[in-house]
Length: 360
Image 1 (cartoon, rainbow, N blue to C red):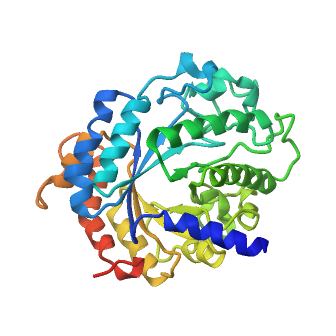
Image 2: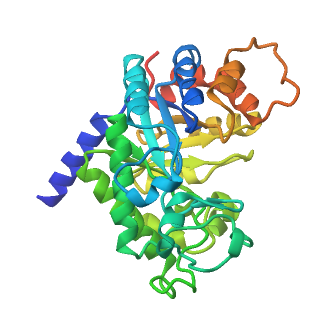
Image 3: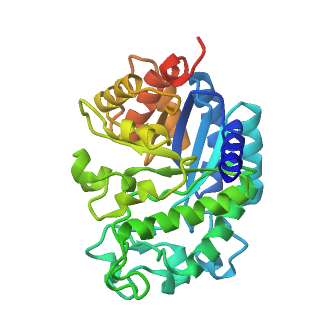
């Protein structure tokens, strides 16, 4: 009986998904309302003509006007519910599914800046009182064993879900290096795989209660040594054992940015029962190799391709996507130019590729 109910629940989540294949763009959400408004032009003149059907907007605890956690107000700015609702409706009318993202567990700081969540609630820090000015670490994490972490993060997730009227949510969870740290009174000595799985499961249960599909980055679920991916594209700190402890209706965004002959994670995730969404970045040879391997290893769980950006305004990305094929990279242009050109070249191909479920 329980198995039947789980199957029905999983089917309901899949029914809310966009048409196959998923052709997506991941974009860091602009905090400036004027720049945020540029997304409409990007959708109308860039994404829609190239065959995209999904847009992921990544927020932090600083760049959305959260109302449910008053302690955050001194640290937040950016856009609010009105702008979110307006953009979501705009995207729906054009057949673009908008999925909000909030980084969970890791990426709670960048360089010397600690983001609002841990500034407002320093007791949630996985390494409380350690690493002044964030020196000696990549990014801070929130504690996966502290119930208050979930109490607050669930409120932020609910605000984003409601603001965008979303049926899916991306929880991030990539590049988590600080977990089970010796300086955490709740986590020290515990199995990192168990701690990571606990966070995934609690987030999944909350999103399922909101009837929302959960997406996450896949790197911490991979064994960096066994796969040969290393400590960035996979884990070497023990979190990879979580792969067998979490629900299989999660969409795993499998990011890899380097050229390889084979990407074993594509098979691993599908064999474990997950839907996998290959995710590339700025390198043309790597993107092409990743797409080719995705085609070779296709199954009903292979979703399409997600183009990640990691920089650039919507206006800049649109300029790259719509420039003539003969256009060369402008002087001083960043990685956004390469991403836009890759989207122009490969997105229409993915959108029509039967390997990803497209109908010709």
